[in-house]
Amino acid sequence: MVNEVEAIPDIVMKIVKDASIWRCIQCGKCTASCPVGKVSRLRIRNMIYQADKGGDILPLEELWFCTTCYTCMERCPKGVNTVDAVLEFRREAVKKGNFPKLHETAIKNLYETGTGFPLSSDIVKYRVLLGLEKEPYDISTSDEELKAFKKLIDKLKLLSLIKR
Ligand code: SF4
Ligand code: SF4
Image (cartoon, rainbow, N blue to C red; front, side, top):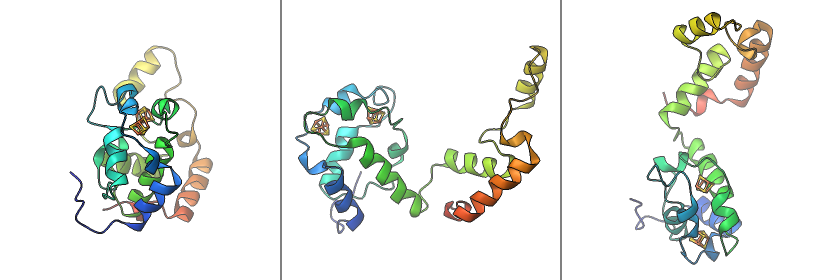
């Protein structure tokens, strides 16, 4: 639950303005049509409400559940840019080191191996049995490309954003 007593973070106020959250009339169409809301605790209407009230939603885990399918935004009768809001909140959350564990793992894997989720030995075994290459072609299959990719990640200082 968001603590509304604390001062409203400036960045939340900016996102409320830029994404037209202030237009929201709490009709609930967004949540009703959200496919992720049907299988998780993501409630985009509630998140928009909390943001409009100045709550700090950056630590919320469900911020990362949205698949950015845009259904809520297309159906919003008031033109609230829900998806931009989600993406902006995520961006700010990352700056504060609020990465979901799974994303942390994917980024570390990407850096070390060139793929977010390396294939398990069982999958490799089944691929070979099916007559496929051991692994599909990607950055991880080329030392040279992996080296260039690591350089890019270093330049972006991506790893320093992850809480260790
Ligand atoms: S559909 Fe739009 S107006 Fe309705 S609750 Fe969602 S964001 Fe607010
Ligand atoms: S964009 Fe995100 S919040 Fe909106 S409907 Fe799709 S999954 Fe739900």
